[in-house]
Image 1: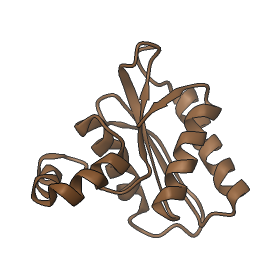
Image 2: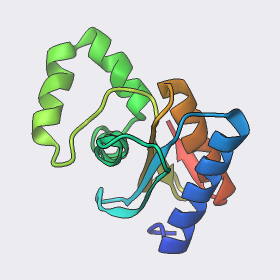
Image 3: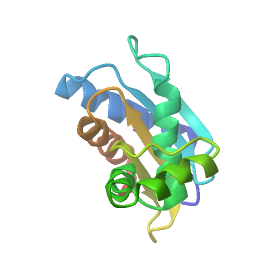
Length: 142
């Protein structure tokens, strides 16, 4: 696999939203990107706030841009806040240092896209993202 298809992206979203429903999470927004950070699919549940699409995209694109999950970017921010703050200036879609953005990889471990989820706590956003990737039969890397 060299890219995520629209069908796979929609399956990721469906899986993430199903996990959110199972856990009773607040309304979620899920963005799925290709390896270049271009949004393939995005859904915003009823009741999601205005900036959620941008937040979900920033979590996904930030993970791709730095090469680690948005959770790890948050951990980096604790040690190197200026560095992480400046990364946001470089990234077209932004970088959001909070859990919920994971990289999707192929069988050899190369990135083929990313998923960003926002709407509940960052830990729950990440749970939904990982569940969505798994539901689509894909593999997430943190």
